[in-house]
Image (cartoon, rainbow, N blue to C red; front, side, top):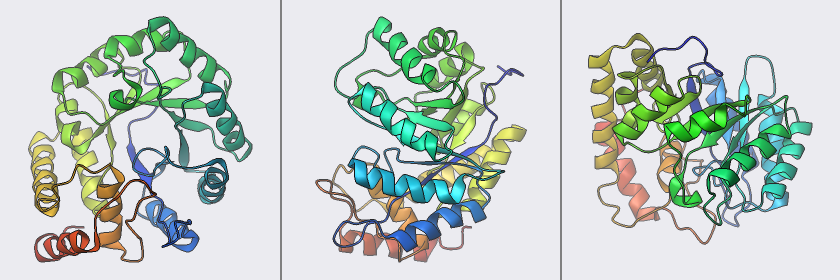
Length: 307
């Protein structure tokens, strides 16, 4: 289903990740270089502090440090930065948004409070309160059912969006085709950012956007993938989908542990720039040195030619 009344433009959304030193402090020079590289690779829409950049793990001091650096490099004409807000408390979420707002951030990525499931009335109140507190800002909802104990459907978004005009987008990491189709059919005015695993399928239903996982490693391929979606070039869309699926399957075939998202995303950044550490904040444990070494061997032997 096509629409000319989108609340947010179709585009590519890239995550800016956080490199940690051995004593788990922010590696500021590497982080600044990473953000600048993302900009230089042509990304205009980028975010900080989702799951892959560990938005669930930062205390207030560290949150303020990374947001100040990010805002300093991205709050400028031609860029559209957003900051992820993950917290159990709605009041604390609003306080963090106030800090970001003072730095010039006008786009937020928000999750539902991650303690208990919201019913329909509570869900509506949450979006109206948080989004209503910042009428000059726009909001993307990170549709992460596993943490919030509720995955929002297309009909949920239709009901919410009708009362919350500055809810403009969603971010969906699932690969269920029926659920994705429902988002595009029932809430086509919202911009739905889909992972590479489901972007091609989403493009068969309507206009959607790309939630980038491979931007740090394959920026040009990511751009071609998105352009194929814009043009509805299905052969190219599914060719790149298969390529990326094959790559990730081979890259992590030796990793048998169930690891949290940044274990994979940070490894992509580390493969491109060995100075970018792929360690995680405790208690989470990412790839070991041995596991990382095997990943580099797989990459260099079969995929380093991909741009």
